Image 1: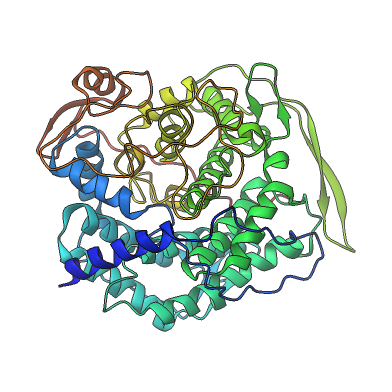
Image 2: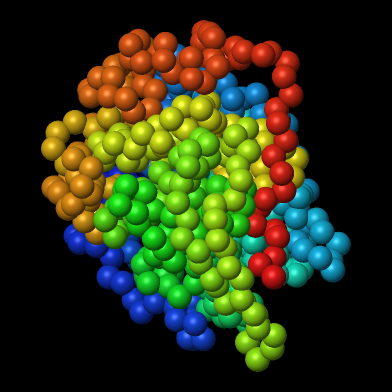
Length: 518
């Protein structure tokens, strides 16, 4: 019953999205430092649902590819089903107040473990079809919406609101059409507990100098507010984040996060001057913001001559051990009316070549598959990280739960055919699209020939573009190179066999943005 109803609603959502008001979302005034921020109200904007990190077409593609045993989807799904959070027996432990940061009895690990269990079970339901996983996801989300009333702690409470706010919204988006899901109560949870904390941060930055907090702090807040806006059909919130991404005063806006574009086509990522872990966090968060916006027809990926592509390529090259330039950057620090100071980052920090995060498949697939652009460093690092896992696969610390992950399963797509870029889902795309030539100039969008419709059961189609040097596809010609890069030695019926069987997954350091900027 639930499966039939979900499919019917998904079709209605698609029709509604197709008939949405033409043109890009009208942008409201951005959030200037010290400006008054009024919570947006629902505008009946008709956002496409599901439409955060995954659209209905995305979910259909995953299910069909996994059923067909197609690579690398089967490997990605095997990574999901092996995760302890993705099991239907998960029992939630909701708290009335969640604390993160010094000076409080921290219990935020309970929240992020439950959130990832809800997301992974919801995703597993859509791909595998077992309603027990949907039941588990709904039970987790309903339990938290019935109990959680506040987020407390030190400044790290802003990180809790941002990270777990956007993540829990994505989990809920996957089961929002279920009869047993408390939709209205969950909207209240987002708009009264999570989003206000993130909106407060974007407005006054914890009463600090606007550049006191590094890039990832802004991006966590932006991701939460954007996810809330889309989930709750609140155009005002969505517009604020789009404007902040383009023109915000904080270090999370795109030109502040990526301040220098080099002649080599790479753009320096500001937080590379801090450390590797936080730089990876920032790239993953900016990709998350861009993907959620794209699925509503808002093109932040291509904004400012595809500035994010250049920044992501820079971080990928740096993490692969390549030499990158870094222009010394001095940022002001301190509290408004209190202490003040400054800090200069003068060079890119050292990197650990074994450190990874499940962030690359989403970004690489967008630029190389949807857009048809050349992104060699993104392609290489995505192959190296594949098949991407999720929360619980990258160590027990919070840094291992900063991304929802499973990008190999969720974002792998065949290369778009035709001249120009694929248009975004939901509402019509906004800013200019990047051209396949790599010049990132505006071009006429074409239909999505890969993500828009899933291959039928039993098929393992070769991408229309053939072996183009992008991410691994389902074609036999690409499979050998992909398996060599990822360490996969066999795929059979979704069974994943890895080299170095029994090797313990490397624990990732605590880099979830928790270190203060002072």
